[in-house]
Length: 129
Image 1: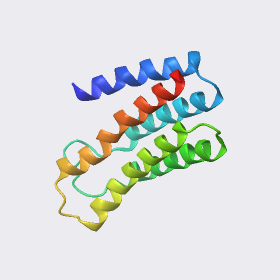
Image 2: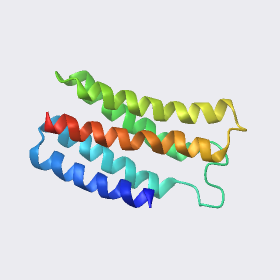
Image 3: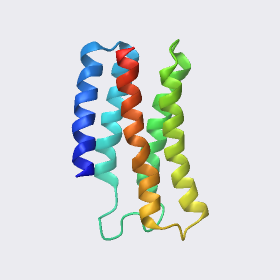
Image 4: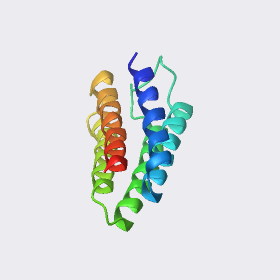
């Protein structure tokens, strides 16, 4: 249920950002879509998912962080700083798994997926404001 909820929210908020947002909101929406699709392509099979550090997902998350950071550095608005900070927290979840390999797979997964909801919420609020 949760992945479907995320996908529904993503589609709605991205559509809203493209409809009502400016250049920054559209770029951030495109980055969110890229990150979601790329993660679905590179993530490990369910049988081994989150057992170790998901290096391909880390690469995608780092690219998303770079994109959000570029937007934040060029923007005069405040919300891009928040979305970049949220993405940094996601990247740090990978670092935590690398530092503590015995971290439970479920805790590792939660550290990555929890913040994605906040990122799209910030995009929606930033578009609205």
